[in-house]
Image 1 (cartoon, rainbow, N blue to C red):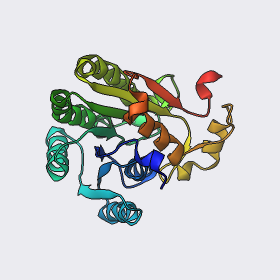
Image 2 (image 1 turned 90 degrees about the vertical axis):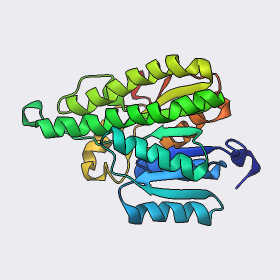
Image 3 (image 1 turned 135 degrees about the vertical axis):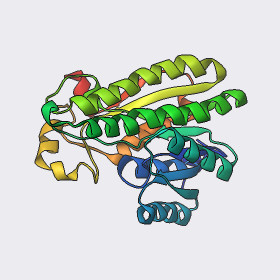
Length: 252
């Protein structure tokens, strides 16, 4: 590793939800590669241990936290455990989420509740638990992972898009609330991105991505780099922003 990347987050601690695969995994590994100690949270213990092993083998520091996130107690329990393990949390990446597709008339109340529980409620209470301590220390960064689908209407994406649109608003509200105390809150808005979770969409993913100037899906690493930028000192004057990482789809 070069000296420059390692200097971006020296001595910092980070918590990444949904950190065992896709964008979360890439973010956890990249944060560790830039000098942060990383709490990797997820449900799959095998994958979680593998992420930690990959980080450790590369010379970084990480620990896995098994967490089935769905409500206030589960969010606060994770925040407490991660802060106890590393002494504090300087960077929170709210990445965990579910992205169902389907018509409104087939959505059940259980579906609705599950999406808003993980995509909105959990980030809300992780911030409620961790942001006040960041504010007392006078520094911290929170990066929320939203979606391009939060900004436009699309058939079969209403529930998912609505949950992420709520997270966009919360990003701005938290920036206003905690920014004056040194805590920067921002978001990334990925477009079509090739990950384990989106792989089953195959040709449909390629077709959606073809509408943008990049003419291809993004990679988890490309989104991770944007997240790490927003979490680090080079983004020190960035508050309440939603950074599109979508291959230029917002430009057309």
